[in-house]
Length: 231
Image (spheres, rainbow, N blue to C red):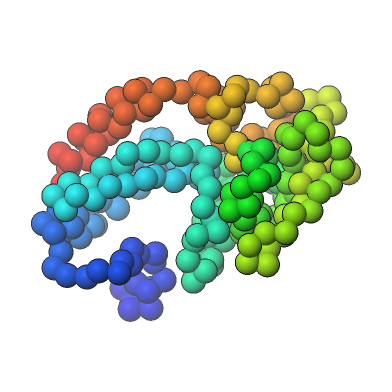
């Protein structure tokens, strides 16, 4: 494997450096087996379009404490990894919706949280650079016309009221192939999104109103046990 290829792969950087902990050395020593395990598991259970995992490293153990299927923080990604982000989006959507060309993002209604909106704007930028036409369809009840908001870092985002016509949703004169949820549906499933004849990612069934953390960690314990036995 070339040095150039290694530098193209995302890696964790920290302010502190020193000898590796035993668990870190063990994971690095078993990297090939770990990657092979992931490939085989993704064939059995395809990965979601996107997700984020909150990790804790105690030095002698590493564990996820939270998994988010409607992630934020895209504005915190290292700009050097933008080509990899674009490639990942193209690969995932080719698998999930190969004919898709147009996407509407349905965000949380956090219009006062400018950092969250900066994350949505960055997500829109990644999808656009991946070759898709992308608009933002808001569920804000008082939004009756497009609203452009200035964001930190010179970014802008335009929110448009999400509209439904028959079994399809869109904004103004824009009908998407994919409805991309960046809204965790903690308050329930919006009727406007029910029974659509469009690809919805992640599915409505994955919203927080339908899931329990206890069930999530029950599945996690099983998967973690299988993984640990392998390495």
